[in-house]
Amino acid sequence: MKRAVVAAALVTVGCSSSVSGQPAPQPQPVPANLAYVDTRATGDAVAGVKKAVETAFSYDSAKPDEVTRNEQEYLTGAARAQFDKTFAEVRTTPVTTQTQVLETALAELRPDRAQVLVVAAQHSSRPDGATNQATAVMLLTAVPAKGHWQLQDMNFDPRGQLVSPDGSSLGPASARDTAVAAAHRDGGVLLTVDPQNADAGYDGWEKVAAEPLLTQFRTDRTQTLDHIRKSGTKATFSPNSTAALTDISPDGTRASALLAALVTTTGAQQAERRLPIHLDLVRSGTEWKVSGMKVVAAQGS
Image (tube, helix red, strand yellow):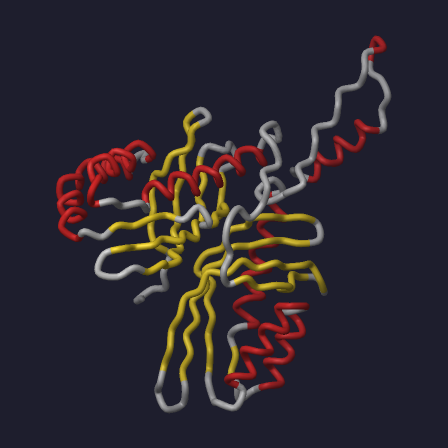
């Protein structure tokens, strides 16, 4: 909720009655989770966490003093201990590492903490020319300190619902919570593939899709169904997948979300993968649908 609205609510609390002796209107309840409710604080938290990740995890192992300064500035608690353990493994080996945040999704924002779902790409190189690149999905807990945000904890295996919904009558918070639920539910439909029941599965895709994704599905239906049947690969979406919003429009009719999808594929071999999926959502009435989807990946990967 914007600060002006919060201030108005506090003023109202101080009043005991209104004209003609009627009781004063009740103040509008403030949701516990201010993510995408207080837009300014949301932007500050997301930008602060992004800066902390990219600064602390971009380093030259040959410059330990610089690494230590950044660590002290942007890491605390368990996150600092986790970084120390990782850095100790490369400290004696010359390596330069650059970290780029590809996508951020704010799951929770309170005055004393934020939880952010992050997709980050890390590229490392050694003097002998050897390189390595990896992409990770992390749930980061951050706290305000020293005038900015510090990372307090890093969870590299986030699972399940990240935050409990605030309630159905809290305006922007309600729109945020229903959009997150739709991203998880509809994303699960779109990531489920069963060659033995391909037509029904494709019908499900079309049911949760909105334009322009719906037209794309209808155009590609025959070709896609043929590919599904020939591949024989089955994909199952885990309910332990996690989701959070990356954005929502002021009127609550458009949103985007990051879905950290746990998908198990079976065919030639069985494997569970974590896929970072960006979903675009549109709302008509009370119903959210998916208008676009893509895998979040670094350029050239």
